[in-house]
Structure formats: C-alpha cells, structure tokens
Length: 132
Image (tube, rainbow, N blue to C red; front, side):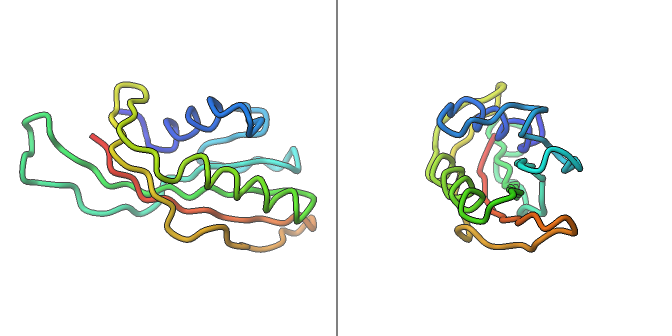
C-alpha cells in the first residue's frame, strides 16, 4: 500500500487542467528550494483505523494529507490551491495503485500559511481520506 500522498500525487497529475508534473512542480514529503512555484503533498496525522473487520480484507484506514502550494504570485497560488481542492473534494470509490479510495473530503478550504523567507506565498489545503 502506498502512502496516501503518493496516490494523491497521481490523482493530481491525472487532472491535466492543473498542469502538475511529479518531480517538476509536484513533490511528495519534502518541499524543494527551487523552483519557486511548487505543490508539495504531506502525509499528516490521520484518524484511528477501523477495527471491526480487521484482517478480513475490509480494513478501512483514515489518513489525512496536507497539500502546500508555494507561488510567486498571491492570486495564482490561491487559484491553484482552489483548483486542487475542487479536483479532490468529493472523490469517492476510485482505485489508485491497488488502493480503494472510498472518500476524499476537504476539511478547511484554502488557507494562507505564510510568506517564506524568499517572499513567496504559501497556501495549504487539507483532506481527510477513507481508504482500504
């Protein structure tokens, strides 16, 4: 089973309207220092796994991911964050890399995180996931 961040990166690449390419402007787990305009996906805290059917192939996991969008321009960064939110929110019953994603839900809309030391704006978008 892949980390949720890996499968989510594949989903974002598949949505060609976002213009994201892995290792070019889309990264998993660590934000690079360059280029300026990047999207990075992080595996975050999550919720307890379902135990009722443990070991019977019906186990559900409830991870979360945070997607951080860094950009030179406030509006461009915000719009990309919003488009990522729209692309992922409400997805259900999709299989990616042999993992069934029963539900992906945005938890907070687009939020300004900060401005980094280079004057680049960073937004975050968080998602709760149900998968097995």
